[in-house]
Amino acid sequence: MAKPWSREWKEEQLALLYDQWKDCEACPLHASRTNVVFGMGNPDAKLLLVGEGPGEEEDATGEPFCGVSGQLLRGLMNNTKILWKDVYVTNIVGCRPVDDGGKNREPSVKERDACISRVHQIIYIVDPWIVMPVGKAALKALAKGRDWAITDSRGQVFSSPHQSAKVTGDKNGLEVTGHMFPRNDLEHKKVHLEYDMVPILHPSYLLREDSYDAETKKFQPDGLTQKTFEDLKRVKRFLTSLEEAYASIPKFDRS
Image (cartoon, rainbow, N blue to C red; front, side, top):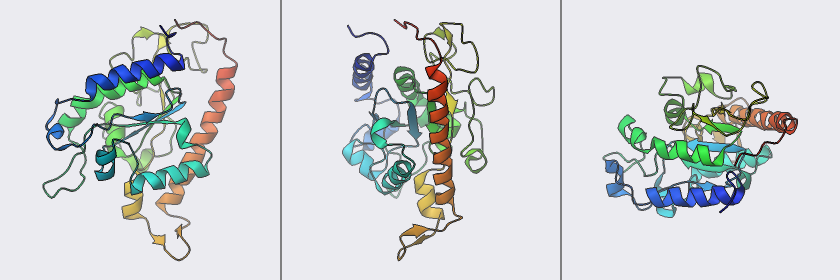
C-alpha cells in the first residue's frame, strides 16, 4: 500500500474518488450530461484551481477548462511560468449546467451543495499550498457561501487561518495531518487543515467583458485580462515565497 500523501497514494485516492462520482445522480444535472468532469492534473500540485462548472467542450471531453475560456486561462498562466501540467484543476460541479436554451449557466446552490463534498475530498487528497477559486460561483462555494464580489476579492491572498476566508470541508477543521502553514504552529505535527486562497476572475467573464484587438492580438493594456495576468503573477510570487517557507520546516512523517 502506498504511503499516505505520496504521489502514488494521491493517484490511488483520486481514482477511488472518481469511481464514487462517475455515475453520480445526486442532482438533476446528471440527466443531460455526456461526461462527469471530475478533475485532472498533477496529484502533487501546489496550486489547485476550482472553476464553476463544465461547458460544452468540457462535457464532451470530460476535461476541465479545455474550451475557449480554458485556453485563455492556460495561456495567461503559462506566461507567468505557472505551467498547466503542474496544477490540478476541477470545478464546483462535475456536470454541465445549462439553461432552457441550452447555454451555459451558473450552477444553483442546490447543485453546488450536491457536489461540494467531491471538491473538498479532492482538496484533501491533493493537499495543495494554494486553492484558487476561478470566478464568483467557485469563490462563494469555497468561502462558505459568503456573497463576496469577485471583482473586489480577485488577486487577494487570504492566508490560512484567515477567519473570513477559510476553505472548509468535511475533513477540514479536524485534527488531521496536512500541510503546515509556516506562519504558525510550526512545532506541531497536526494542525487544522485549512488552505491559503487566492480568487481570480473567470476567463469566460474576461472574454465577455474585455475588449480584444484582433489585429494586434492583444487585450487592452488596462483591461480585466491584463489585471488577471497581474493577479496570476502575484500568485506565482506567493507560490515561490511558500516554497522558501516550507523548505525551512522540518519534514514530518505523515503516515
